[in-house]
Length: 282
Image 1 (cartoon, rainbow, N blue to C red):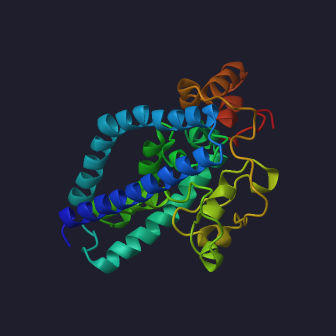
Image 2 (tube, helix red, strand yellow; image 1 turned 60 degrees about the vertical axis):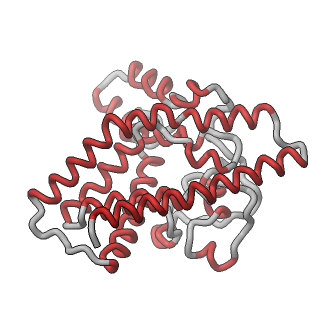
């Protein structure tokens, strides 16, 4: 297995789920138009979701290319114990990357500095396929930091990056209300039913179902919640804006305001690295 073959595999997987997502979007729009549930606000919200790709892709182009090059240089220059390419290794790498994603995702909910970026993804009151491309601009930086230890362990950089792409691409199809519960699959995979729970801001749904491809990580670490009643989507606080700029920076004004009002270094530390919503004086 060559690096070019690995890169091609990741790209093909990404393209396949893009096509699936596009098909789901068409059905969602047709269904919304047919039953008259497609409001002006929901359309503006879709536009806001797509707009987040502008800063996200700028970071991808001007920063993540260099991060990728750096990962490859570290892997090929200093990691002499690098694993040999094989399909078995490719599957293992994907499973490990999915495990790492679980913790990356969980920390993004539990550390306020990371939440300032990930909250963008949760800021929609709707659940449709375009929410899957609603990202904070620096989320790829967080992903790179969390997956870098895989390079140090000996996983080839090309496999690590392909696995990151696959884990992310897989999640496109789960951002929809079109697909109901899937029986036994809901107990193993991250499915639309499981991910609707993750986007719910109801008390029992908060901070649940972090998995990327597999939901078994949530079952192992006590963060699994099955879908019962339809969730109320969006942030737990009052945020209903469909203004793209407000969506891009949804958590940053409050974050910097709290930092500015902090009266000590320890309070600033708690604001940055404590849980979102927790008092810095706690």
